[in-house]
Length: 245
Image (cartoon, rainbow, N blue to C red):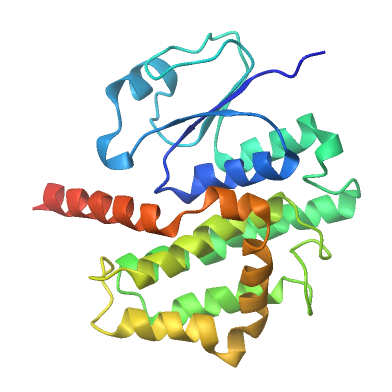
């Protein structure tokens, strides 16, 4: 039986579609991407595809779609990146995106919850709401504490969708801190200080090793272009600032 076509609506600036592309690459599942910049989101996306206009959005099956097409309402369609990750894990069990063991699958959900409830708010708060630098460092330390003590990935060392949930946001944390001129609301010099702490401090040696191992995987190399992300993120931020004036 031929595999059903997968179409993913995506924006490079957002970590959430990146979660899905990582999983698709890890599983070696063919897919089509319809990509657009968040600063110039096309009207047809909200009108014809996904009324919330959020990304990602996945269409499962049907013909090849072009920008501006309306997917058939009879096709399975999903938003919400973590829901899509579980859908892929369940639909393609041979890809081993989640372990078969029910306890480890439960641990994957707990890891994803920590990303959503602990790490993501700290990233947004520190970079865009002038929260203390230590809030972000504490969140990184919390995620580090959920990893195996020596090496490997979130669930007992094996890569899973739990890693797909975290890595895109952590990569964007580092990229935001690297931007020059900075687009965050951190005081001058603080971004460089936070970045040096996360990349070099012994306190974060385990997370530094996790990042190295993650970026050594072909899926991460193929789906992450920091220079392209930084350019688009800067445009997005500038547009958002202009709207606020």
